[in-house]
Image (cartoon, rainbow, N blue to C red; front, side):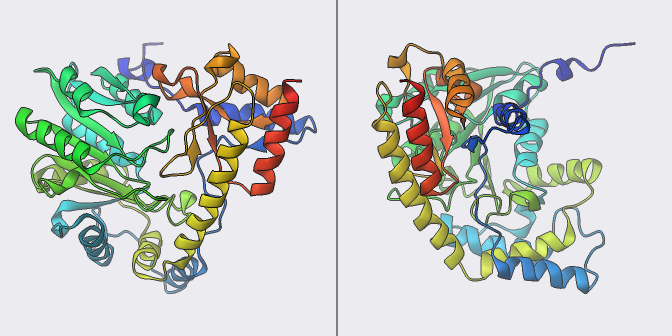
Length: 386
């Protein structure tokens, strides 16, 4: 048998699914496992969003639609971007996607050639590095340091820019650390991109999931007309992970070509799901606010609990729904710790190394679960070291 394409030997999976499989194996043995590995809100999709999808199916809105997305959803996204980022993109700058992940893939597929350099955060969402490897481009991870509250430092980015740099990827609020970049930091990176004629992808999937920090976007300098690309979606904020709905906003000529990728790969995003997306953006936002009130309580509970465990230390995240405690004083690697907690405490979290080499010495908890479960997990973790 002939070899597959070279990129297929480079592409990687995600640690979340690896540890979920390990946890499920324990559960098949009759063990009760407390889950903190998957980045999925445990709240149901709001009723008014589901009702729109039901109605659309019942009225037979179930066929093909325009590959780039239905106009009504694009118009709702125009309103959303104007409200949240301060500018109004043209509808031709918007591409509707089946989830936000295709936006990462399409952006790199459309912009990055073999040998080009891509700058991205480490620790960071595993898909970034995986797609860079797949394309036989060069990974340029930038360390996120706990001393800087895990925010990407523009000075570190500037030091890594070369003639081969093509794309900078940002993620704020950030997975896995919950950090939120400040306005002046994003402005500086946008300035660097302009100076060096680079593209910037702002992965802003957690844009609505903030506590006390303010949200700012790297797109504000050029309003996605020249080099910045905005990626967002519905999975997290509206608890629509399985619906697969996202969108990307960028320079018109780039979005036009991504639309061709969409035609060739996926035809279109599910029609009735797009209708539900309109209701998500334009309908009652109270379910989102209530979810974030709950996440704040959970965040405070898990941070307090993790800091009570000997040799653990945990910063308070400013966004998303993840904690990233430091476990270096335990003397265990992040994978050793994640395995210890799974098999001895029956608490499933992820090793920080799953998010890049700079994640070593940390573990990630998704606190998309109840306060009672969080408190039980803290008790079981503490007991596992006795």
